[in-house]
Length: 120
Image (cartoon, rainbow, N blue to C red; front, side, top):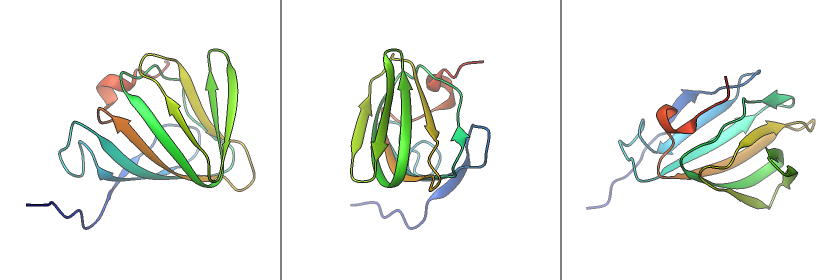
């Protein structure tokens, strides 16, 4: 039988400013470890610590711009674009533009604090 997810769980985000994470599918809201799906809303000037996660992350930007720093440079992902970051590579996300960003993040396997490996 299909499982209906009626509401997301709001999760506290890392970073220098408050960012809203609404997990629909994942370890917290649905008890799913295979994949996580979350709707993120981050304000202008938000930046999180760098990380070297053990999961692939597929991100689709709905509004604004998401900046993705990586070992070889920086990629700005605009509304209507998507990016894939791969397990084991160092990345850091931020939203430097005035409108912040609204985006969907899918992690495979599901996001966890034990496997994100954030910088100290």
